[in-house]
Image 1 (cartoon, rainbow, N blue to C red):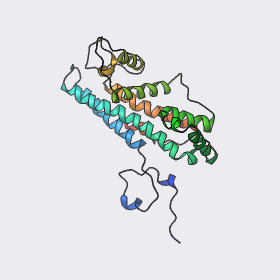
Image 2 (spheres, rainbow, N blue to C red):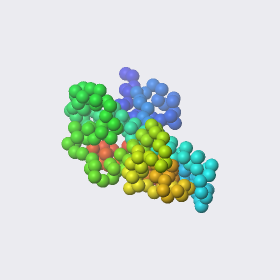
Image 3 (cartoon, rainbow, N blue to C red):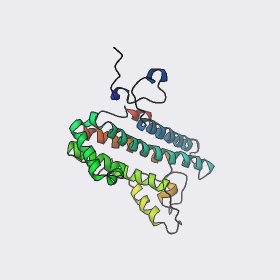
Image 4 (cartoon, rainbow, N blue to C red):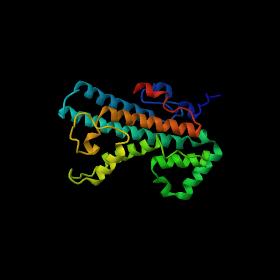
Length: 236
């Protein structure tokens, strides 16, 4: 009798560091949520190091490098949550049970394209309502912060230039960010909005990472599912 294949959940956390000789004949999937989150932590640490080395200085060439890493941190932090949502959907039967998984699939079928175009947070909320008949509290964190983080990511990815003298979209986002982060230390123009430049800082990138983690933790608690990020806070 041939060796039985392990269940898919037994090998669901295979990464690029795994020994290919061990997994080449296994039934496995590559998951990216943890990889994206580790990348976000890496970029946060780069910003933190730049701030430490250049403490007390004003805007300079080093700030541009900080910007590169801060933007990368935000992109990968949100990518981690998006990958997490896709992984929850891929493992819906194991996580929620066959009946709940069937309900999710039926909702996907009924809603069709509109369901597929829902944003990540909305999809996770929908899974929660279908399977647990509960909702995330929209009035407090981590929901408010994750929405602000996603909006920051979208504003960076789909950046629309506005003149500093008249920047309504930038100011609207800055207003939301002010409740989450403080201005960075290197641009001291107090009349300038947080976005698109003054948000660049180690405290902001740490907020981005911790927001992604906190949102997933809250979701796991409400859904009654195991820790996905395996105590990754210790790496931040």
